[in-house]
Image (cartoon, rainbow, N blue to C red; front, side, top):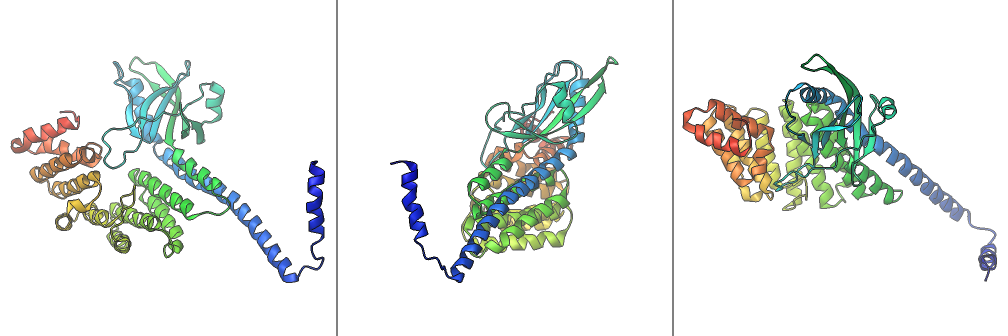
Length: 408
């Protein structure tokens, strides 16, 4: 049977439908058609807006770290002697492309952000930078997305020129790329595109998770206002879905409120910090014993954040009092249990009680070495114990510092 003969009976059946279709049916059909068209348009526009929204955050961070990248490159180019090897940055890379050779040199080696209970850093394939002078010149000063050196990862990079005078008086000029790992953002975008024209709960939760992660980067870079705006906007996006949503969605909302509480504490906004913490505590109570898979949001983590917020606000006595009310076994992550001890150490360190601070740092290291090894605060407290703790704790402090590979 030819395609035409197969199609003809169907067309004839359509022609046999009543000629006078009720107006109500026509209106309903028209409305449904318009809704379908609108949803498709919204999906396309929404994904485009989402892409710009997610990448804009990374682009802003690249602008903020440009000075750090310049400093890192300067040390690499100017320092005499053999290079000790690339530094390790979580989710970031710095590449130097000298004029003449145009051969990229990776100065900061990217590693995957560590999940709770992980012990080793996983090195990521860095950004693949075209070496042609025309490509480098064309993308100066404008963020650009490039593939990874291997695999399917994506990187966002900001390129800028740098000229340095070396120790012999010569001039070293080249291009610097400061890169951020954006694979997760692109995965969110692709996932929403595959899930059809509507933004599902999974997509909204993924978007909130991206905001939670990016907010961490913004806060670490000192942009507390930007981080707070990002996570509160994400929490507002989830708010209408909380009543009928899943526990995962509610936990994500709670994690965003904890994020906001910590960010406000960093900024010294005590009232706002405790207001957001109260919201998170109410959500944890509503969830009962549920713990989010990767933010570890739950009752134990909310209690831990109360200690952190108190310490960030320099309320040392309050931090210790709140810590005394926590059973570490209620915190499901070993890394977070170690962090509890780090927070207690902070409360003593703020009063220069180095022996007590060292004791809790040792407890943290025994619980989870990563909670100390990869915490800038814990490393600084250890160094202070070595330098200012005196003979009473000198041997123990140096032993811990050696375990953290700190210079002695």
